[in-house]
Length: 219
Image (cartoon, rainbow, N blue to C red; front, side):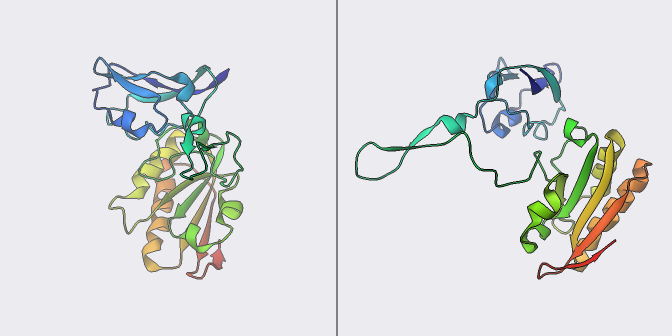
């Protein structure tokens, strides 16, 4: 089947192994000092390994590959009861509890270019907003590509990373969700500067959320 997979540039790879640690499915391994995709069926195509690579040696590509098999869903775990050797088996068809359509979501970890960005509506949200609004997934994340951050906790200028994302991808609209607290104004300033630096005219809608989860303003 044709699906998104990772590809590793061996010339760039320095064998640090950070991508191997980042892959929770165990699809990667170090072979002769280089990172290798050793289990194509364990590669989910989400790219947790991309932001972990300091050499920018990992990219996405669309190609023929085996269907994804989640190794975690194949495990049987002892239930710990005393009624015999019963086991709990993970069901591969779990109910959908999240509207997230990509990973990672942290601004600092997100790749500068990725297939999911092109033609997307981008949600940029302050960390705390998701904990303030009960129906945050349905109201804001659904149908959008999501990036989150906190300008007070992260000692970086988000505008640099965001401007590169906007320059290198076809973003249709941006929705910013921030808290009413003063420190969260940094999110708005970073997004505005990023749009300016990108040289593009991308529509921006901003929601300001109260500490009680109310939408105070939208513009």
